Length: 152
Image (cartoon, rainbow, N blue to C red; front, side, top):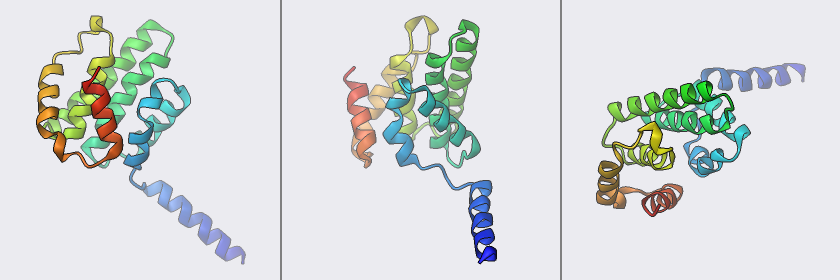
């Protein structure tokens, strides 16, 4: 019996160690909530940092890093955190610029961040791209986010 329990514990540890892909549905469903929930934001960042299996995972990591800046008190740390996220988003876009979800997440960040940060250069392009390709979205959380972002 002890052997079975040890095997089970080892199996669970192995799955965690070698990384199961981060559940994108969970990230999508809780993305907006991370802006007001510091703990959730940090948890999702930690999970994404462990497993960046796709460019979509990468863009969410960047977006959550920019959101994390809202939860930081020190102005220098706040700016450093935001810039780190912005760079991560840029990396995801560079790797897959025709991905609807990546462009949507970038747009959501650019529309929410303060204008004085100057991170708003792609808003028109992303809006046009998303309106053109809206029919290709087959995820309910993404459709809700798209409608929210385009109407703000």
